[in-house]
Image (cartoon, rainbow, N blue to C red; front, side, top):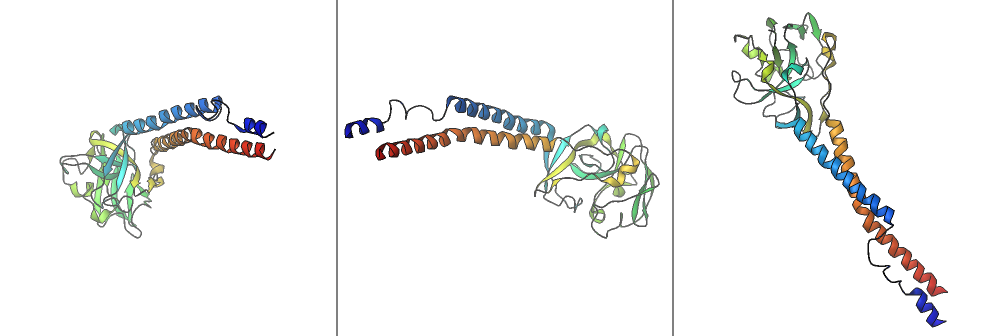
Amino acid sequence: MGVESTTRTAPRGGASSGPAGSRTGQRLSGLAVALGLVLFLGGFAWGAVVYRPYTVPTSSMSPTIAAGDRVLAQRIDGGAVRRGDVVVFKDTTWANMPMVKRVVAVGGDTVSCCQDGKLKVNGKEIDEPYLPEGEAAEPSNFPTVTVPEGRLFLLGDERGNSVDSTAHLTDAASGTVSRGAIEARVDAVVWPMNGMLERPTGFQPLGALSSPGPLRTIVALVIAGAVLVLGGAAYGPVAKRRDAARARLSAESAGVR
C-alpha cells in the first residue's frame, strides 16, 4: 500500500514544466497583450498627432487656467475657431511667443463693453461664468469694434490683468488677430488635473460652439490598452499559482487515502 500511494503522489512527467494554464487561456492572454499594446501605443500616437502641450506662463486666463498650468491644445486650422474658444496663437505685433486667450468675437461681429458690467457682441449681452466671481467684463469701457473678416477679437479671462485685444485697440487691425495666427485650441488642463474645459454657453445664441476634441477617446484607448496588457500578462503567474494549489490539494488528498 505504501508503494502504491507513493506512486500516485509522484508528479507526472512534464506536469511542472512548460507554460501554466490551458492552451486556450495562453492564447487569449497573448491576444489580450497584443491588442492592449496596439490600443496603448496607438492612443499615445494619436494624441501626439492631434495635441500639443503648452505651459501657460501668466495668470491672464485665471481662474480658468492659472499661471504654470499645463494644457493640451488640439491642433486646428484657424478657420475652425468659434466664439468662446480658448486658443493658442502667435502674433509678433503682440509678443514673440505663443499666447493663450479666449475668442469673444469673429469676423463680421461687433463687440463693445460695458453695459451692466457685461460684454456685448452683436448687440447681445454675453453671460461669462468663467470670469472671476464678482468681476465685470472689463475694468473700463471700450468703444464698439467691428471685427474684420478673417480676424478674431480675443480677451483674457482675468480682464484686469490681461494684455489682450483691448490693449491693442489703436493698432491698424483694432486689436484683432488673424485666424492664420492660431496654432491650437485648448481642450483640457492636465496639470493640475482640472480636466476638459467647459464650452461657454453664453455665446450659443450667436452661433454654434466648437465641439470637444478626441481627448476623452484617446484617454479611454490608453486605459483600455493598459488594462489588457496587465490582465494578459498576469494570466501566466495566476495560472501557475492556481495549478500549484491544485497539485498541492491533490497530493494532500492522495496522502489521506
